[in-house]
Image (cartoon, rainbow, N blue to C red):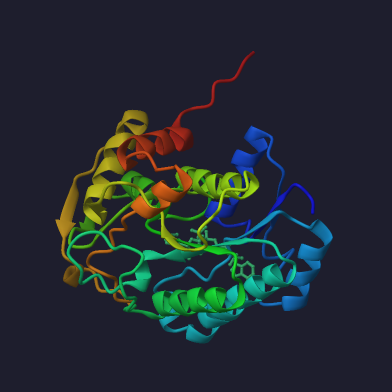
Length: 299
Ligand SMILES: NC(=O)c1ccc[n+]([C@@H]2O[C@H](COP(=O)([O-])OP(=O)(O)OC[C@H]3O[C@@H](n4cnc5c(N)ncnc54)[C@H](OP(=O)(O)O)[C@@H]3O)[C@@H](O)[C@H]2O)c1
């Protein structure tokens, strides 16, 4: 067994953040983006695991286009169900524990208050359904797994809501954003740290209780509240602050239905792994600063 963590889906926003933090902290992480390893190719997945002999595998690869999934159900299923099953069975065959990422969109959003791990899944769309089926495949194939359900992910890398709002704030006189969907914005920074906390627990020989955990930002907001905070944070760097108008879900029809409430309770994760995300507002301000602050050059 080598001393590294192996990441599938390393080209995505979470994968890139894990690699950046690992480089900054001197951690040994091997990242495989889709061109290096397609998780739908079981022999490629098994070969990479055999070659790298990791101590922990993270599956951050997924089909994440929530609306497009409605018209590309087979592609979404291939990656989110069969790809997940491939990684899980190859990890189990090599006797390596697996962290598999999943989503708040496995829930239908009808609950009042935050969802806990034992709440029944009932996805409203193809993306959530394929992720729920992927979870089931992981449970069936890999006894030593942590399924980490997260939500509303944003960070420095890749595509996300925060970066879309930053772009629109520079282009439009007014932003209109849905105010009747509630969730917990989660920074890739915190998600990467949560995965390192799992790795630490495994390395320390702690008796890890394998299974499903929620990990998200500790407080909830609406997309509108999230957008307002992003616009306020960027105004410091751009001087532009277009108004953010609250609209309802009905005013913004999308191919996929989304849960009206997908808050996640991360208490079980904190109790097991001793780590909680910091509140999302300061994280949003930090992320916006990292993206917009002019780089000082020395002459
Ligand atoms: N983003 C969110 O708000 C959110 C919320 C809840 C849960 N999650 C979950 O968190 C995890 C990480 O998401 P993320 O935000 O980092 O997503 P992301 O930025 O879309 O990254 C996903 C990565 O997976 C890659 N991929 C797709 N199909 C693949 C395949 N067959 N083999 C290998 N790689 C493949 C994608 O490559 P291409 O770009 O080439 O397709 C992309 O680099 C996912 O499991 C997602 O379901 C995300």
